[in-house]
Image 1: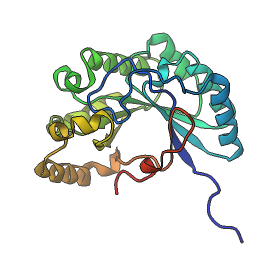
Image 2: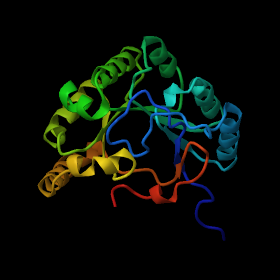
Image 3: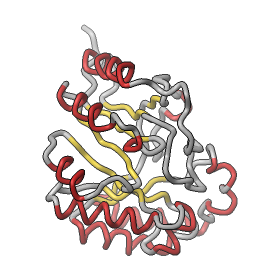
Image 4: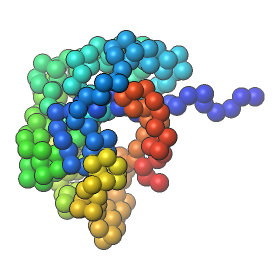
Length: 241
């Protein structure tokens, strides 16, 4: 008798390395588009393969996936083929019209990146104006009745004191808070010593998660594709481990 799965239930796909921001802790050092990036047709072939493998859903990241001009085309193609989508975004491109368009789609989950509950803390790592962009995207999604979205926070030594405020912000939108770890990869390796939580803060984070963990997401994806359709073995792990 055959046991187990033939394909991952979900996977993460870095759809592009192009990004409108230059976050100092970006694990993929995103910014410029790579010439090897998959075309629309190639990306659709990947989605066809995932459909045939019966992958349930994909986490689309980057870079900033909404930078791609074919983003909505690929999004609708995926959902139309029965593959649910969760995508991570800095929110820059979610205006009122796009928020309504996203709200009209099924099998869709959106995660907004925010690394501070105020512009000073957030913009120090994500860039000037990025806090306002993220909050505006959240407001637009709420106004469009998108439903619960996620707010994703990379925990650094500068925002650990704001954990309660992050939770309150998420609750105010009816959103779910996701706490992720800083990884010493890409530009994150260059800023590791500056941003990595201290030993005392790591204990504080642990205690906070023990108190709020049932209502807060943690961890990483189990299977990871880069922008060229190649697997990234080094990231196929549980971030909580």
